[in-house]
Length: 534
Image (cartoon, rainbow, N blue to C red; front, side, top):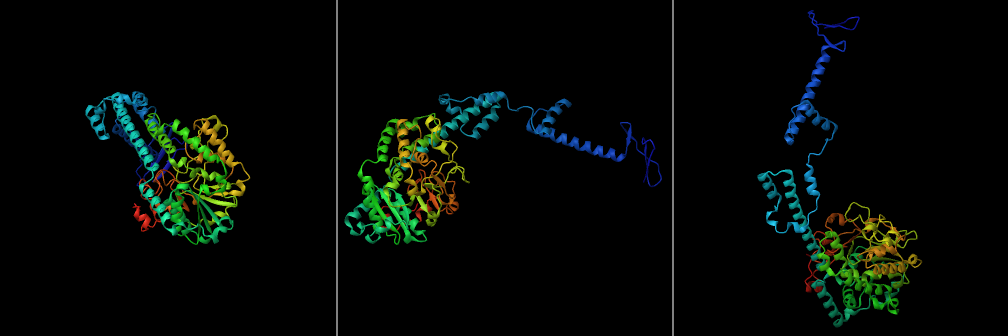
């Protein structure tokens, strides 16, 4: 094949190899192009037509109106080619109806006419083929009904959990009574704890000192056993157990009969502490006032549940605020650790709803850098539900007193497993700050915060917290079940904070084995009170 181009560049001649003169001329803007260019153009337009066909076919499948003119086709294709649509395909009337809130009384007397399931709704729609307005009205009714029923169910669930978590299980009550009886009849249950030769260790700062404040014998036994069992040097462990007057004898009986030697266990009731017995204790006075205010201001659980305007999570928080745990002196007494243990330099405070899964002696090597409280912060981590807590989650920043003193987005930290440098603490006014803010909350009818000792703790220790590795404290095992058993087993300490305590029937069954593994269910006291693994 030969190619001849004229001097003017206006003619292109193609000569086939066999000598037959054939050529193709195509005029484009006063120039001539080869037949190959023509073929490429034909292929391009063929592809474009196929692309247009596919787009219009998709529109037909989507139920859009067919285009009969080139202009209509352009209106459809341009938004698609640009990646957006010119306007919404949902009729405005549907938005107007769905945006309008629906009162509960609007559904009264019409429940039989509202579809109960999505299947019923779709069946009715297919049969009646309503217009957009009627469709939106029916959808709004069905969704509103489902929302009301879901809210009612959630609040009932929270109420039942509150009742279950607030009462003392009969098994634990049985255990305390049996141990109290054992204390009165068995000399072995009245042993001095610790023995006389080990008493000097109680104030020896070369030991690892742990403090546990609780009135729950079974919970104390699990904390103590898990602590000693996982300690690399149990002979250096000293556990100071603080309890109330009415649970002192059962607690002493249990640890007298269930030795954890070579670890050293001390059991004392609050009235045994010299500082506590000398005079007025600010935290006790605050607790008395707090209980009076709550009884008048809250109106009890029935008043909380009867409020139909609040979201279920707010109702749950208020119910939790009524928990006896938050009115227990055992929960407040930690703020007086420097006075209770005047000879000690450093302690690790433990809640009674934790399980220890590793040796905790490395906590004494943590450099506190002059801070008082070593704690895990709760605003970072993979579990966004648990590790997303900031000051705004605990304090009421709509109150000017809170808003003027704190940053709502500042990270919170956790009670439950804390390193306390008592020497550094004694140089501060942390305890006085704690009591001051308790008084302010009482004066404001509990409007600064609603529940527990963590909010005033967050305030009192503000600026005095050293953040430690989250390995040492995994939270949330008592209020959500998203934590897997495998993940929990990798933590140094797991914390069943929340209502679903591991000694209650409402505990999450897949997480409870972390706690029950430290209970001997063949023990005569455990077996006699019908305490079971599940």
